[in-house]
Length: 282
Image: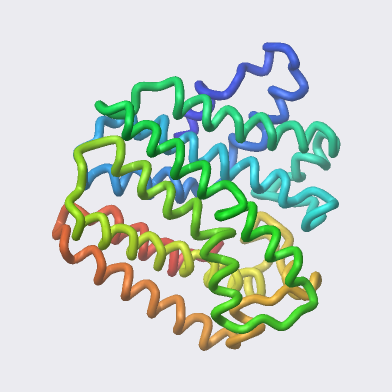
């Protein structure tokens, strides 16, 4: 994915050079690439060609990278460390970081619209729609808005879950969906099972993030540890306690694996990614 993304991003020599350098800085050289991995793992269920999945996975990863750049801005979380290096607005400047996010988002949709990703044009339009919803006010951006509005407030567990189903889960669900749409159509039971898997993994990812933010050191995380507590944000750890939050992540892990039983051995990579999401240390 690193080489694929490097080839899809504008070359640093192209004008405007500073913006293109900043875009590459924000995307390359770090990150777990969980969303692209999920797209590829899901695509194995529909025998999708690798080149199609590369483009779809890159589109999702570009949206994710843009969200991190904007998330770190002073008007949002005001962070100065991401993936073990200075955040985009620290390395460049705030205005450039804002434009980086804008440009990465539009590049994602350009890739989905320009490339031939499936046999039916209607399916490619469906891919565009899924990613747009996942990134917009009914998805990631909406979840971020709720997150900002929740600082210093006490949320219930269902309210916290609603926030993260949008803020974190929407893009993870989109990665799984886009991966499958690059290949043969799944039947209705298969679609439902995969949607449930993606929902469980999306929530589990956030629960583990909350635990790691409270327990792991900055050097391991590659970003500032303890930021949630410092900003008085509601998290699964503050609401449930670390032990119960870990139990909840394990429950989601179990549910995700159970949803995959319908696929048998074809879902091996999806199972391995479920294990990684819950057991990761960064």
